[in-house]
Image (cartoon, rainbow, N blue to C red; front, side, top):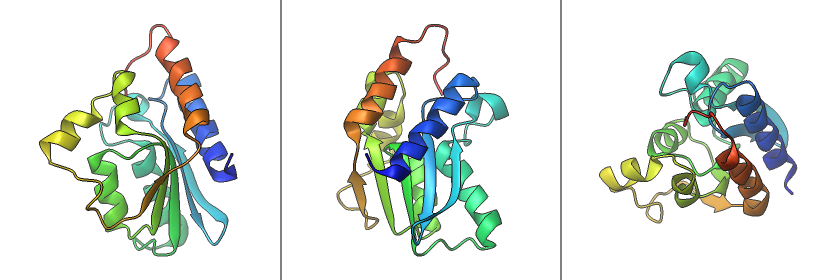
Length: 154
């Protein structure tokens, strides 16, 4: 497993354990160094934009003291939703590595596909390189989350 995706998975587990949000963890890396890591906090913050990627981008901005993350890569447990994808593009992230797909998100009750379809997002045409990695490991977390009782979807 990629070490940065492993850290993203640990972030996701923290969010689930603490009841802060869904199973999405994120790590931003520059030159092999972790710049920021975060997880979904939608439930904790009562903020629908508090996704793992958005929270990591905000943390990275504070650390780097810039909004331009050229030279950075982003690792996330789930393929970014359209909102997070656009934020990554605005931030000039060089490449996104994700574990599970939008379709995997849908199988456990998340509605990212509704927005993907509504905005006609064609990931093949987006200029930001994205690569699926460590899907099997991320799916283990997704399966565990799916089996949880009394969870809220976010």
